[in-house]
Image (cartoon, rainbow, N blue to C red; front, side, top):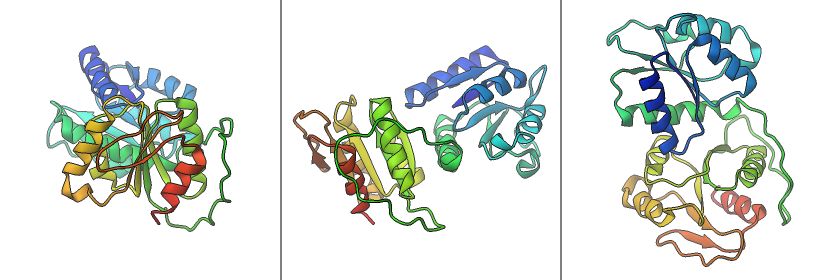
Length: 254
């Protein structure tokens, strides 16, 4: 996530909220700074203050949308002017978030923006993990569904993301397991949820997910990579898991 705001308190507070939710966060002080950061490392979504000195939010969006590589990058506008008439389609924005922030509303909109960003970045291939995978299924025009993944090892997370994306799934991933994960699950309605046993609080996350009746039908797999004892109430468990095992678990849910 890239947060763009000229107010340092707003910028730092939003950054901390998103970090606590499990996102990787970058901060920019104005539109010009934000353009530099987007070009250096494309984010999955941008939280953008509309009114800033220097290059403001509207000017940033105009410059951003002029670059084909960033024409579809999801942007959420932030404004303190309630009732402001904002033509999102004209501006090229996905949502409006009003200040002062309702944190639940903000995080729900961010989760949906990340979902919309599913095709925005190139998959970067990591070294293959052990195991034999079946060939990717033929892609249909329609997405095969969302898979929500928590894996603390970024290289393995990237590899698993790539393997599932090749098979037509939309992957929403993070490196930390949080009780608030149920918020993402409610917003995205994933085909399956894969949780790394080594992620702190995984049992609390499973308990929270299973306490929500509307999420009870979503398959959850808690996995361990190196033979750790696996135990998570009301979730499938798998020890000595390789990427092939995890992909095959997801494929079984079709």
